[in-house]
Every structure is written in structure tokens, then in C-alpha cells.
Amino acid sequence: MTQTLTSMDEYHSFINKYPLVVVHVMRENCSVCHAVLPQIEDLMREFPDIPLGVINQSNVEAIAGELSIFTVPVDLIFLNGKEMHRQGRFIDMQQLEHQLSMMHESLKS
Image (cartoon, rainbow, N blue to C red):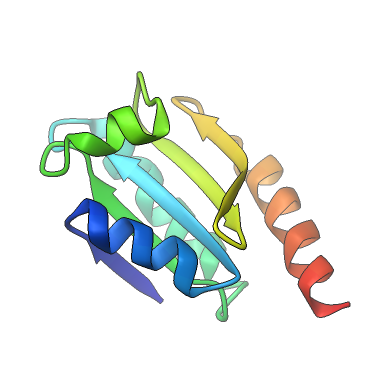
């Protein structure tokens, strides 16, 4: 389930609503961001109960300060509202999947 986050309030609500979420931060004219997003969406199909939030920093500029983002794309995993894993610029999909899988398993036990 992919949700577009269009404000800081939506972002805060999203990360606190679910126990485990992934957030993809991108910009409008970032070709890497737009290339990574389908890969993230494919990965998330393996975890149908974990929502994906997509936030466009071009429209929600305050997210950069909130998350100390200096480059995009940035993919973050939040567990119980706290940032647990971050990858920026060069996204290692295997590492992201590994971290997500470990946190997903920890919620089941």
C-alpha cells in the first residue's frame, strides 16, 4: 500500500499510525529518485502489511530539516514511530530488504 504524503502533518500521522513503515523521500527533478521508486514498490509487494509513504521534498520542503536530509533519494524504515534504518543517494536494495525483514520478523514474535 503506497500513500503519498503531502504535508508534515500527514508524514507524522503516517509514521505513528503503523508499527512498521517505509518512507521514500524524493524530489521533482531527480531521475534517480524516480528510478528507485518502482524498485521500492516492488520490494514492498513482499511485505503487503507494511505501508510505503512517498513524500516529494519539492512540495514539502520542511521534511529536509525534520529528517536532516541533504541529498535524495532517501529511504527510511520507521519502527513504532522511530527511525531505525536510513539509506540515502545510493540505495542498496538487498540491505533495505534485509533490514525490513528483520524488523518485520521482530514484530511477529
